Image (cartoon, rainbow, N blue to C red; front, side):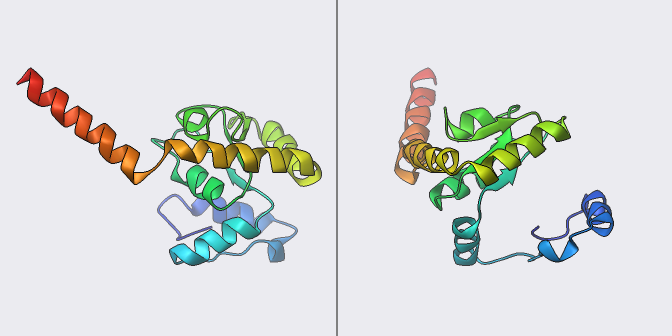
Length: 144
C-alpha cells in the first residue's frame, strides 16, 4: 500500500484483523525506480477498483513485466487491453480470490498476461499521446 490516504481506514481495519500481517508491507510513497522494481518482483498486480478514470497501475505493471488482475468494470478492460489482464468482478470477493489463486498457481497464465501486457503497451506512448492531442487541436481550429 502506498501513502495512507483519506479512505485508508477500511484497509487498515482489515489489516488489523489479518492472521498473516507480516506478509503485508506498508511502503509509503516510493520512488519511480523502486516502484518498477516492486512491480517486476511481484507475482501479480491486483488492482480492483469499483470505478477509475484511467488505471495507471495497470500500465505501470505491464511495463514492468508483471501480470495484472483487475476489475471488469469502468475503464479497466479498455486500459488493460484484450487479454492483457485477468478480469474479475470487483463487487464479488470470491471472484477476486479465485483470480488471485489462478495467478498464483498458473505459470502459463501469468506468462500469457505478461506477453499480452507488453503488446498492449504499444498503445501508450508520449509520441502517440502528443499526436492524438495535436489532431484534436487541428480539428478544433478547423471548426473555429
